Structures are given as structure tokens and as C-alpha cells.
Image (cartoon, rainbow, N blue to C red; front, top):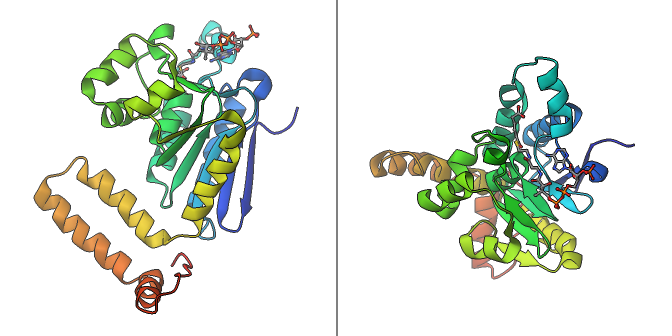
Length: 260
Ligand code: T3D
């Protein structure tokens, strides 16, 4: 059995691959530890300008490894994994200062769905599905799902999906706004790399500012948001990529962004 999370960086694109296909990429302690550290590495590495999160096998990720979890419960262990893993992982995805693309290749359940919802852009295979799953095992929510899900589908539908967990097929997920694109299974990987590559070659400072502005605007007043937009636009406007984009526009050529 190899590493449960693969991490590779090529030309500014970090690819993080869940690699426990035999366990439907269930999140055991080692997988959660490794995923958290991979995302932290991507976040802090200035050479990384976009992140692609995906998985091997027929599932994307079925959430907490319940087979490991039952052992912890039987041994009288407390629940520390939300603080130790799910919160840092969801935070790393949502606050990554570069775009995060997720390629959902199969079922995404519980925290697995939560990780996908925390990302910036979601592509799904036509064989994929999403289930909140938590209530099915008598849990509430984690991995930021109570924050992301209502923002994606609205409060009423979020409540429905959390109270009555069921696998939502990819096409329905598309119409609900849970994913941006659905592709035939054999086209998913290539399409996801193309999207992630475009973002990795893009204006990284502006992307980080866009992410920060959206997150800030979601929970602040208009006046506060305008003030933050001013600061963020000033930051983006001072970037080399902004100067390059404007020069390229005037010269009628394609810009070449360097991510600074
Ligand atoms: O402390 C804490 O734990 C808090 C943190 C919680 C975070 C969470 O993520 S809680 C939510 C945990 N996940 C679930 O409850 C999902 C449970 N799984 C399912 O509902 C279904 O398996 C799926 C809808 C995801 C997929 O259904 P299907 O029909 O495609 O597959 P299956 O036949 O149910 O499962 C195939 C195998 O995967 C099976 O193993 P077996 O019988 O072949 O040995 C099944 O037990 C295993 N599996 C599926 N989900 C998990 C799992 N094994 C461990 N953990 C799982 N989560």
C-alpha cells in the first residue's frame, strides 16, 4: 500500500490526490494528517499558483473512516479530529491564497463533500454524487459545511440536505449549484487539469484578492466591504501582473503572468 495522499508540483500547479481507493478514500488519521500537511505546503509555497484536489478510484472521498472511528469510540476515545484535522483542512482549502479546483471523480460524502464545497471551482464526473451523510451517523456538520452549503444552495435546501442525507447525483448537483461543471467520467481528469492550469498561469495576486473579497463580503456590511475592496484592489493594482495585463491589452497581445 502506498502513500494515502499524493502531492506533486509542476509548473506552479500543485496536485493533491487522495490515494486510498481500496477504502473509497475514507479519511483515516494518516490520510487526514497527510492531507492537512499537503495543503499547508501548497499554501505557503510561493511557487504554487493553483491547487487541484482529486482522488483515485471509484470514490472521491466517503468522509471519516468509520472503520477506524468505531475502534476509537470502542476504546473510549474522545472526538478531537474536528479540531485536529477537519477545521485545519477546510480552512486551508477555503483560505488558500490561490485558487483551489476540485475534480470529484465519484461519491463525496460527509467531510469529503465538505472539502469539495470549500474549494473555489468544482468539476464532477457524471458518475459522481454528493451526500452530507453526517446525520446518517448521528453527527451534525463539520469541514465548514454549515458555512459553505447554505452559500451554495440557500438555507432551506442546505437544511434539507443535512436533515435528510441522500446521494445527490452529479446532474442534480449541477442544477442545485453544488458544482460548476459535469463531465463524462473519462474526460474529467483532462478538463480539471485544463481549468487548474489556466488558473496556475493567471494573475495570482488578483485571484488571492478576489477570494479574500468574496469571503469578507459574505459576512460584512456594504460599507465595510467597500473599504476592504479598496485595500485589496490597491494590492492587486500594485502587482507586476496588473502592469503586464494593461500593457498587453494596449499592445493587443496576450499577457504573460508571473504570479506577482
Ligand atoms: O470524529 C468524527 O468522526 C467526526 C467527523 C466526521 C466527518 C465525517 O465525514 S462523518 C460522515 C462519514 N461518512 C459516512 O457516513 C458515509 C458512509 N458511507 C455511505 O453512506 C455509503 O458508503 C456511500 C453513499 C458513501 C457510498 O455508497 P455505495 O453503495 O457506493 O458503497 P457501499 O457499498 O456503501 O460502500 C463500499 C465500501 O466502502 C464498504 O466496505 P466493504 O463492505 O466493501 O468492506 C463500506 O463499508 C465502505 N465505506 C463507505 N463509506 C465508508 C466506508 N468505510 C469506512 N468509512 C466510510 N465513511
